[in-house]
Image: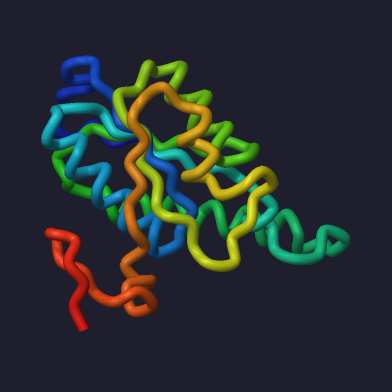
Length: 166
């Protein structure tokens, strides 16, 4: 999926890669990545790494592949709606594999300037650790980790200065 509505195409050769899995932290990362791409005049690449989480629970049922297909269509629609009219050229990438590995591979291919991901949400386990942690160990380029806005209540509210409230 691609949207170059503003016609600027690749702009100045800069690229921002953002991971998205449909959770609140990923949505916050997408919003931050759009703003970053806008500020540095870059092309935004949204990556959804297809994992077992997209398939549902039981691989022995007929619904297994259908569930995955429905989930991927919903993810593409969510991204399309979120990026409609943002004024930043973007491309959607749907790739099978471990998320940190897929983000790393695309960032290397594009010689991306930044990778943006949401902080790992509770309950998400990937072999080898969280996606943000793995990226920080795998990368030579900047990795921006955006806090999950739904997790704020657990740790107290913080304003932009980093001071806690409440």
